[in-house]
Amino acid sequence: MDKSNPSPTPTKARKPAGLDLFPYESSLRPVAGLAVDYEDGHRVRRHRHRRSQLLYAISGVMVVDTDAGIWVVPPTRGVWVPAWMPHAIRMSGEPRMRTVFVEPGAVAHLPAECCVLSVSPLLRELMVAAAEVPLDWKPGTRDGRLMMLLLDELKEDPVLPLHLPQPSEPRLARICRAIVRHPERQAGAADWARELGVDPKTVHRLFLRHTGMTFGRWRQQARLLAAMERLARGDRVLDVALDLGYESPSAFAAMFRKALGEPPSAFAARGTASA
Image 1 (cartoon, rainbow, N blue to C red):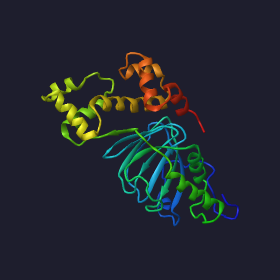
Image 2: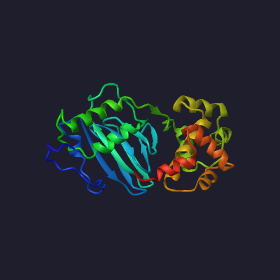
Image 3: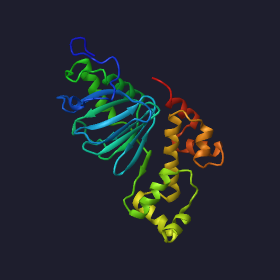
Image 4: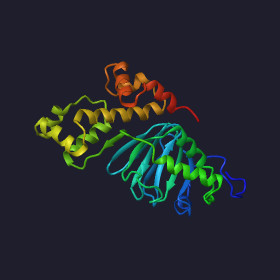
């Protein structure tokens, strides 16, 4: 914070009860930062913002639900939510959220759709610092340069495949809802085909057409996202693996490492760590 700026800065993260976001969305500056800590299991009802938003959790996991799909946001990752996109958020593992609200058009070529981003160490520190910057920061000052660097860094972060598409096709939606509720079920495409009275090829074709994934890939993604939530809450790797239908912890670990580039034990350690 600039010493020349008398505006107060928060020393502790704000709590969700009675939180007023209007000042962050109506600021005269193109970007505003905010820190909020949540309890495990807290839910933010469906809402939308006038500004685009990047959500980042120092610890814990956030699950963002939109009409187009579900995004799971583990530590070191962020989720980009474009302006006016309706979304709900579910918290797992007591997330310590840091977020920035970005004025539409402030930065060119930012994603037009919701997506998970790999938050670089630099962007992480910028987001943490942005939560301490006054809403009326002055251009050209240290605070102003920090916030403009944050906007520049946003353009550099790659998009990650931590998304579970939610189809609107009724038969497919029924299958997907059942898998999300019970990801441990071993029912395959042939089993669902019999239940729906269609050919297995129809099930495979519907998944590819409406989700861009095969049936097996979609089910694996659903299990991965469920695993991330549970690990962030502190559940044991062994319990998560067996509860999700894997024959052994090693099979679960192999899937997890292939998808995220690290073993579930390392992910769990980061998800429950404090900043």
